[in-house]
Length: 559
Image (cartoon, rainbow, N blue to C red; front, side, top):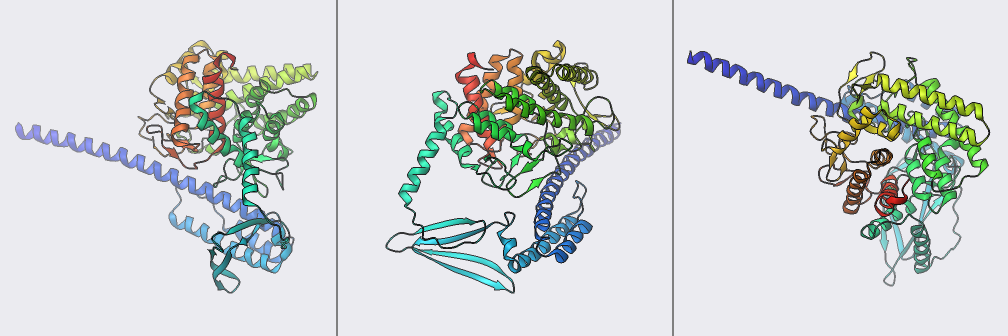
């Protein structure tokens, strides 16, 4: 009998061990898959940029460039979660080989080198000496090394961006004068940012600098002055990030705020789609971003007056953008739009996208409901009463469909669009419909508020994007854990509409404290507050400025 009990206990222990190991392997497999997916996204962006350069080069070396383009199209593959490292290396090899040929073409065709898609820089010494050490290899250098030597105890280096042909203009720069001028321009910009409580004054100045230093002039595909997301490596404008930056500018810089809001619509396609991201030389169309623009326009109008011309422009562009979603992103015809990739939601790798897309989520419905409500309001203001009624009815129909399909027993859910299967996940993205405020049915609203108020997502540093107790939580997991600015801003705005003012102040303060502690990082570790990824990100700066002003300094005047 004793032996039987021991055998049973050993069998139970073995089963427990096997289950534990199996769960760990599943988590490891998901993490590896997620990492591979991120590599695939980066490679896709590289290929898109390469194709832009190839298209430009075709005007100079048509035959060779067409052959290169055909090779890229033939051998390019999509790197997915199940791809192998060998396939990744193969794709990187293709990019490297094409880049080498483009360099050779650039050397042979000076006009190509002068093209805006092929930027060059000249470095010269105004005082002191610069010597060049490089290893030349047939048609290019294997490496270049600059050695700077002082002269009479100082040196001055000038780096100049070359758009066409560089010539020495013998310009002399007074370093002290240049620094004083830049400091004055920054001070004027900083003074125009929204005011904040005294304890965040230093953080306000840092946030203002992050934003100011990321502004670039109109050029190429940028039809207006633009604020990049960062000057580190996120040197683009993405099509939802720009909305938060426009909000921070709206208090005392209405023209700049309007330009920042409209800049993505300058590249709107005939179908109504706006790009995923742009900079002066590249337009990325492989994904899109969520339609928060109606919500953003409503927020902007609370801070700045818009002319009739601006309202007309907004109505036309926003209407086309909304119709793009309705026409091209409702493949099952159920009245609810879907995301065809996690990147389209802005929550690239969130656990709501664990299954094969497309995925139907309530946040997308909530954004479109607000956008159609805003279109209804603007239509009425601009004398389009029929359109106003049409948009209002579309908003009501989508709200009804959302409540019926995407809330089960009052709880939000993610649905695999094709199969109708519920996707089990612990992502904060499900709670973004709180942005609808008191328009939500009471049972849904109370459930969302209760979860946001609990310790499920709310940590000492803000709202985690994945429940920290989830087996899929990753401290530096991008949208699988860290605290982010946009999700925080959207949720606190909805909570304020629900009357949860004290909760809003708590969340806003914790987020602003994270920024004060760790700077304007792209995101923050939800359990330590450590800054993660890009360490100078503009939407983090903008959201901190807006929330500290609206919810911590002037809550009685908020919204």
